Length: 200
Image 1 (cartoon, rainbow, N blue to C red):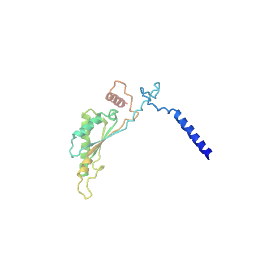
Image 2 (image 1 turned 30 degrees about the vertical axis):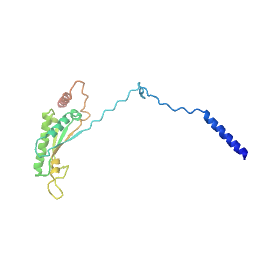
Image 3 (image 1 turned 90 degrees about the vertical axis):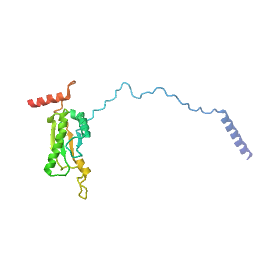
């Protein structure tokens, strides 16, 4: 028993002596970052983003008060349309006129056509070519909101939304699209295409 105690004490003494002699492990030091280094190789060019595919333009011009004149917001929207790449591409412009359900069918068809003509005339007055337009009067046939509440009373908010002109600018057919040489304006290129078509 005494031998066992002596061995245990000796082992402890040796272990403690060894701990005192060793130096503590060095603490990691923070390195100061240098200039940022790009992980991209300078001799490799970044691929160019593919051009976004042009889609037909859809726009809605409202006539909420039932009058036949364009409001300030409608004129601003039409000015945006004239600046769009779809407009500059030279495709057909389709104007679909709509009304609410008040009045008879013929009166509503006439009113929807008149609204589409107001939009067309504004665009033509501001540089669009009249031959690009197709007008489709739809009257009350395609509402986007209820014209009446469930109790049968007029839904004035819904009727206001239904008095509108929906515009679609279609993209020209691929055969009609030609590369416009540098320095030639799109309207000049369109005139040249029109003249070539007329000569055929």
